[in-house]
Length: 98
Image (cartoon, rainbow, N blue to C red; front, side, top):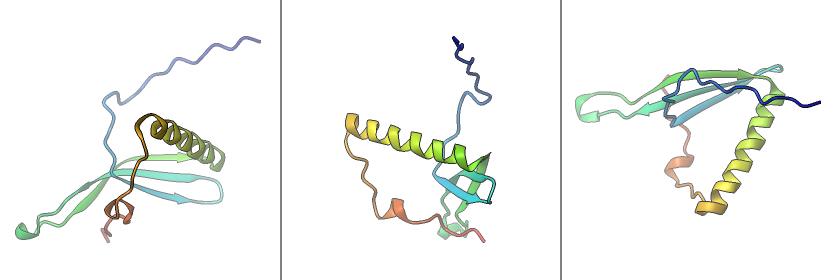
């Protein structure tokens, strides 16, 4: 049986930049919240904030497939461009906004 490839369409063709991702889960789904850190300006008493702009909800099976695909893409990227090095700063969790 010959299956046609599905047509791919994007709702948001411009995309969104992400510097933060929260991941939560229940027994039946994973929830990914993507956002951007907006730094504060202490001199002006402006507090840093994270604005979350996109929420993705998916099954545990699809979450694992996404993780496997992301790992594969990172391996290919590093083979082509070299190792992605994490700095101490990049491994810190995002600041609390509570």
